Length: 222
Image (cartoon, rainbow, N blue to C red; front, side, top):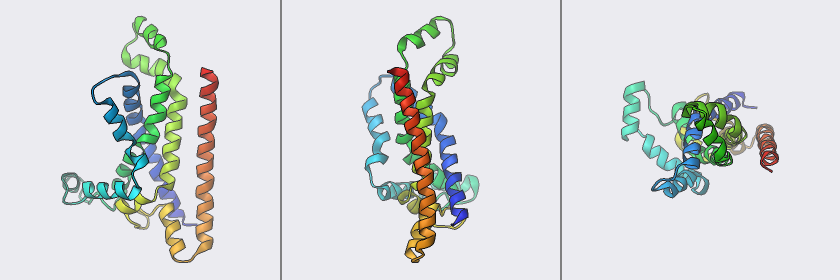
C-alpha cells in the first residue's frame, strides 16, 4: 500500500469537497430559482466534464495553468511556484471537473423545495440569507450531501486530469489512482490489487451513502 498516495488522495478529496460546498450551493440555488438568458448554455458548460475525455479536459487545464498563461504567471508571482505539477493546481483542476457531480444534486434538491415554503418565510419578514440558512439548507441537505459525496468519490478515482495537470510527483501530486497505474506498469500486481481494493471499498461506501440519502429524499417527497 502506498500510504502517502492514499493520504494525498484523501486530502485532495476533502479539499475538493470543502471548496465545492459554497460554490455548489450558490450555483445550484441560482439554477434552481432563476431564469435568465443563457441559462441553458451555463448548464451545458457545467456538464462538459461528464462527456469530454479526461485527457481533453486535462490538456486545456494544463494550457490554462501553464507558466505562459496569464493565470500561471499571476500564480507564480503571488505564491512563488508554478501552478502545474503542484497540489494547488491539482485541487483547482479537481474542483472544476467535479462541478457537475456537486451542482446537479444540489440543484435538484433546491428545486424540490415547494415555492410556498420559501414565500411563507419571506412573508414572515425573514431576510434572504436567513431563509437560506433556516429553511432552504435544512430541506436541501440530502441533495447537498449527495453532491459532496459523489464529488469525493469521483476525486479518489480521477486519473486522466490528475496525470495531465499534476503528473506523478511522490508526496505532491501522486494520488492512489496514479500509484495503481505505476504499480501495474512495474508488474507489482500485489500492491496494485491492495490499493485497488482500498479504492473500491471507499468508493462503494461513498455510493452506498449516496443511495441511502436518495431514498430518504424519495420518501420525504413521496
